[in-house]
Length: 171
Image (cartoon, rainbow, N blue to C red; front, side):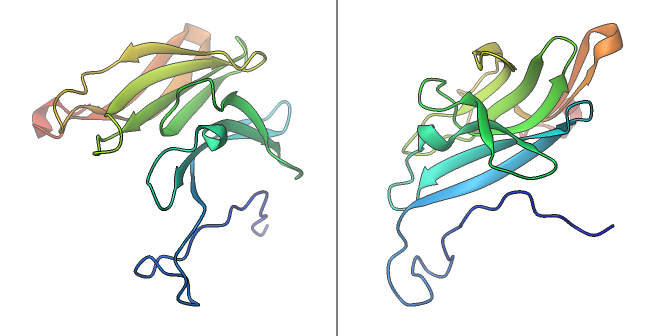
């Protein structure tokens, strides 16, 4: 079959900080991340980050894990928003048997915000987010989570990471 668009977000034009009409870019830049599907319910989960284009500050109300039906409709915030304290969720994996979604929240430090490198889990019903592991973020070249997978039959969570200090430690 062909491609089906379920959700799109506007993204500011990227030509020297001006729109095609020459006006300064305003608003929020939204970045979509990883995907996970619940085939039993037909729900597609995705990560979303957002930054104010002018200041570079996070827009917490738009950051989180969302779901949308594979038949279309509006996305629903599952975990995140203003109270969750998320920065940049990206990779994720579903554990539907336990009603959980595991995801990373990882971003390199910038003058406007500190480095974050967390392995998080959210309850799919309540939206409550728990940090399972916070990795060292003191070194600017810190370990960064790069992918997640779960073996629900054996209750095992797998993750991949990169250590920018040495290639021999990458897993």
